[in-house]
Structure formats: structure tokens, C-alpha cells
Image: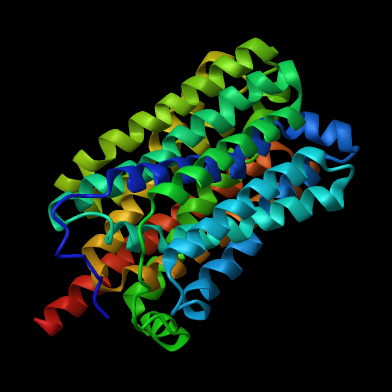
Length: 397
């Protein structure tokens, strides 16, 4: 199966591409807003922070299901309609969470979000290839993926600040408004988007018969899991362990989001120069940061520097794994996209679930140890996957 690039396009559909950027921003912001509002959500619904963290877990579970099944089950349906349906469901999800009277309804709203996350991300890159001529594809993808970094700022400092003023429910209503703007924009901007051929279950899972792909997917799971097991419980760490005031907390989360944006922007330079070495180095640096946080002995300034460094280094991860797909499986973008999203969401959900148990029973000490071990495993798997890929391509050459 070849990636279908519309060779007849002379000019990119920039408005449609920007509508996808808004969609990604609203989608990822909705996914991680609970991270900055974990404490007030838990207090109002009378649950523990660990239970509130499971609202991230349920997103991951449903996202895995959607990412693996959407393309094969809708392989003849125009992608424009699929994207519009997912955007409408995102609005509904935010409203349900905002009005949730209890924990089960909260999880129901988050489950709908999971379907949107898995479905949207599994086809986002492949759809972008139909919206721009070949020369503009890198720019188009960079615009769409920039939504992840912008969402980090929205879901951390801005959501935390607004939550302290208008309450966490109103924050989710504002998220619904942003989602509605994305839906309307996409309705008017997206052209007809034909489905790619060959998106069956057999072809998708056939990719995993290649050892380097299977190990690469495993490395992706460890990569995102090692980061998110701490990220999910970042606010309780800053609020309880470092005893930051609400104003200071909002400032730290803002700097964290800006650092994440910076990491996204500089990642392209390093990954373009030394892709394999950079991918391994990023995970080793995150491992070292986890160990330093473990042994920082409550030194507030030092802890904050390490937390900001954590945000900076994560900027490399989504760019890195997108580059991995582009360099190795560009002709199977939609199929590997589904597998990749499933791996990412599975890891985020598993990290939140494991992290919730660890946080409630051991505290941040256990979180840092677990993160370090997972990141060490990720670095090993990345090296092994790349080595097997080079051997396979040499044999085929």
C-alpha cells in the first residue's frame, strides 16, 4: 500500500490544515486538562487523586480500541465525514465531563474522548497527505502536530489558573467551546478525503510480523509510559511535595508548557542531524532526570529545574516517533498510524493506572523509580529496533 499523495494539487488546503491544528489542540487539551485539575476534581467528586487519574486511563483504553478498528471498519467511508463525527463527539465529551454529577458519568465522558483521540490520530497524518502537495507536506504536518505543544500550555497552566477562578467544570465547558470552533471550521474547510486502500486488519497486523516494527512499537509504549507515569501526577507533586501556592503552581505549569513547546521546535534540528543517537539520548536524559528528582531531598528550586527539563525533553518524543514512521514506513502511514496511536494511548492509560496505584500507596518515591526503569527499557528497545531495521534494509538492498 502506498501513501496517497494528491499529485494534482498545486496549492495546499491551508485552511483545512489549520482546522486540523485546532482539532488537535482541542483534542489533546481535553485529554490532559485533568492533570492540572486532578485535586479539585477529586475533592468535588469525593474520590482520591489516584481514582481521578483513572480518567486518563479510560481515555487510553478507548483510544486503543478506536485506533485499531476505525480505519479497517470504515475503509470505504470518506475521511471528511469521519473527522466531522469525531469532532462532534469531542464536543459532547467535554459537556458530559463538565456536567458530571458523579464518577461514572465522568468516566463515560472521558471514554467518548478516548474514541475521538484514537480515531483522529490514527488517520491525521494520512489525511494531511491529501491536503498538501508533496513540497508542502513537512510544513503541513508540523502545523498539525504543533497542536500538541499548544495543548500542553492550555491543559496545564491555563486550565490550572482558570480552574482556580471559575472552577474545573467551567474549564471543561470552555474546552467544549474550543472543540465546537474546530468542528465548525472543519465543516467549512475540509474537502472530500477519499479513504486509502489496503487498510484491512490483515495488512495492519502483518506489519508486526517484522521484528524491528514490533520492537519499535514496544519502544513507543515504554517511551510514552515512562514520561506519563510522572506527568499524570505532576500537579499533586508540585502541590503536596513542593507545597507550591496556587499562583506559583500556575506559573510553573506555564513554564513547563513553554519548555515543552521549545523541545518540539528544537527536536527537528537534532533528529535531522543524528536521529538514532538523539532518540536514545532523550530517553537516557529523562531517566537521569527521574533519578535526580528521586534524590533531590525536597530542594524546591532544584526540583523545579528538573521538572522544567522533563517538559523540555518530552517535546522530542512525539516529533521523534512521527519521524520514525516517516523514515521507515511512509508508504504505510495510515496502518502504522493506527498501531502507533494504539501503542501510545495504551502506554498513557497504563501509566496512569499503574501510577495511580503507586501514588496512592507509595507516593512520588515509587513514581520516580518506576519512571526510571521504564525509560531505561525504552532506550534499550529503541537501540534494538533501529539495529534490526538497518539489518533488514541491508538484506533487502
